[in-house]
Image (cartoon, rainbow, N blue to C red; front, side, top):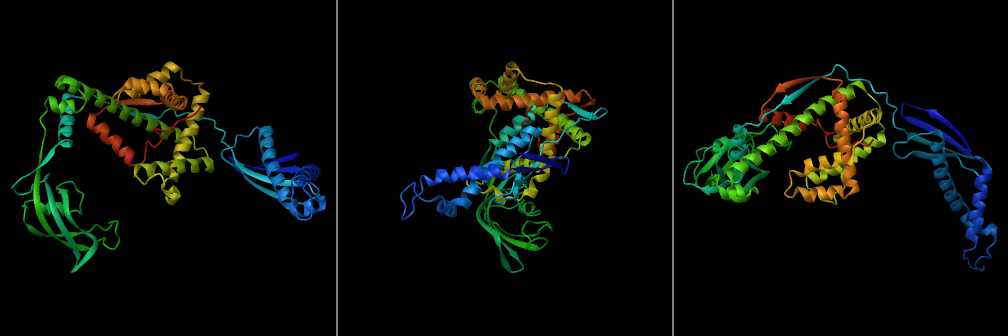
Length: 450
């Protein structure tokens, strides 16, 4: 077997492999003899069909089988001998495939990039310093009361925050438009779930009122035939309801798993959860700055196959998130929606793997268990979660990857200049939300293998 390698890019290799004609012909003849033993043809007894007939009938298909096996086997042998670390499957194409001639094929493949890590020395990282206050806990309890509020019908004019039950029909000029009508729709004024200007015009309405509401659809409205157009809605108000907030009593507190309804324990549990949430937001904010600096200092090429794998995974996550069902064909989702983010994830994964390797980082069982216990705190029965994770090698491996990733970030953080910045709980959560909406921090759940 003769092998020649051409480097066509930083991560692409073109391997040309030649196999002597005799080896192919011998393998084909052997396979044809085996085939002849079981061939059944009219006019011949089983196993007595002349080889010339067997070759005429089955020669081409047998050669294709042999060639396919040879290409797979010789490709593996070649990349092993050359020490390549392929990323994804190769493209294999025969270039000379004729009886009596040396067989030749070309395998084009991508390899993992060779990374020489550049330092992020001098990078400035802002690290939020957050303290969850009693006022923050009060605000969280107020939010929980609103989430558990009941709507009670009132004989009063609708105010901001009230819920109105309405029928409506929308018109462009004198013509009703598709999708512009509903009956018995429950709308919370101030929720901004309707066209801008619609909800405000319901303030002051009472049950039984008929109103004409005029609005202009935004220029970027998703329904292009309505974008930028003026519309009117005929609205019938059936009911006005107002939120009735629950009292913070034992019954309310027990809904959140605090036995006995003790308010002191309730507040302590809320503060504990908020503190954990704030710490995660801080870690993610710091990590994102480190990842951005790492990518900027190390603009490595990423294999297309890995980006496609990540893109496919993100498509599946999106389909699950939006409840599209297990049978949904994710190929219907355009690659373009995910490719840039997927490329960033792959790049970060490769770089973090190199950081882990360069610093010989590892995670012990005790460290893995400590991380699992941290994750389990948010569940009803933490011990059950810990037992499940520690008894499942696949889950343990995922947690180990997360621990190694944290260690890698800590190592990189040693190269940076860290500036502590005081932030409130609300500020750090708002910053985390903005980061998520901007598509940043996409790598926070990405498992990195050493």
